[in-house]
Amino acid sequence: MSTTFDIYPSDSKIPSFKDVLHEVTSEYHTFLSDVGLKYKPEIEIRILTKSGDKEIGYSHADSFKWSDDHYLWAQIKGIAGGTDGYFWENDKNDYDYWKDDVIPLERCSHIRGQLERCLSVGFHWNLRRSAGQPGVINIFYGILAGVLAQITDGVVFSDDSAWDYGRMPIRGKDFLKSYYRPDRELSAEIRGAAISSIRYAKEELENLNA
Image (cartoon, rainbow, N blue to C red; front, side):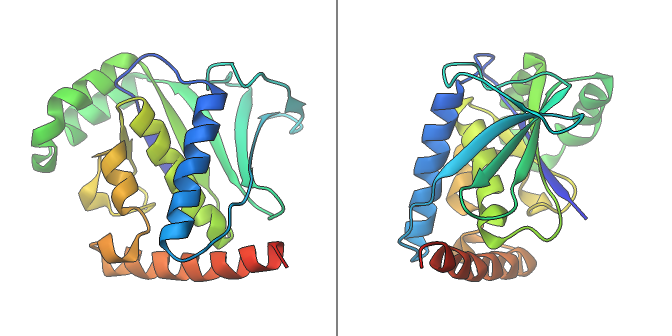
């Protein structure tokens, strides 16, 4: 089973690969430090073809987007596994779902204006985590989602059990304050997943740096 995060920006200006890599590295290292892991692993971002997984070159100055024929692969250097990402134009199903089922939710009352702006921008990112990923990736792919939302004044959303559905959609900055931080998780199930992932990440990073 895989889980996904959708990131809807309210700012139509797409950040560069350099900006995303800088911000996610900073946020990831801060998270690890906050939970007692004094490691600063390197993050690697590649663009691959959907057919044949051929690596495609890009410049760090390029906008953080890619064609439908390609996908993002982001990982922690030296550790197997990663998260795949997609850049999608919003379609009629996205508009109908958000307008009919998401924006009217009572918990969205304080950010409805922002959600309308997010929907009007016309595109979003999607990050996927397949089953059996290492702890470092369970943590990382959520932080990448939060960073993308934060630097585009956007929101993070998922309805497939990637995180606490009752707290989404959520602004990027608010998501980053809580995601997989055991003392700030409201769901016992998510809190347990966070604790397990942090424990596994400790072992994985210790082995990487042994």
